[in-house]
Image (cartoon, rainbow, N blue to C red; front, top):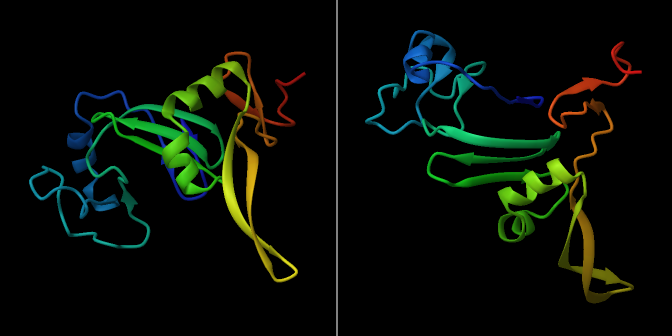
Length: 160
């Protein structure tokens, strides 16, 4: 569903994902799971090359990936986890919602947000208000297919 240089999100069709993960426990670091979780173990704690569940046993129910390093996740507790490279974290946390990511994906219209920064010029400090493109679904490395979900790399034989 989504992949970056050091992480991926996938959709698993299974009766019990944690039971399946336990059959491959040698490949996982379950040390950050709650102590009462069936998968909890410190056996592979902080070992290089082991997979880690960043949500620590909480299931992701929805995801929207607009482009690399710009995605939003919604978990079973209804908690949003959002990333937008190049946008200040406080702007993402306070002024961008999961629904904004969905709207950008479906409408193909970027979202702009206004924020304040401090700058100095010739030894004088100024407070500036800036408006910046915060969310955008344009990925210059992938061709987005008609369903607005699936992509192909530019140069792929199926792209006319």
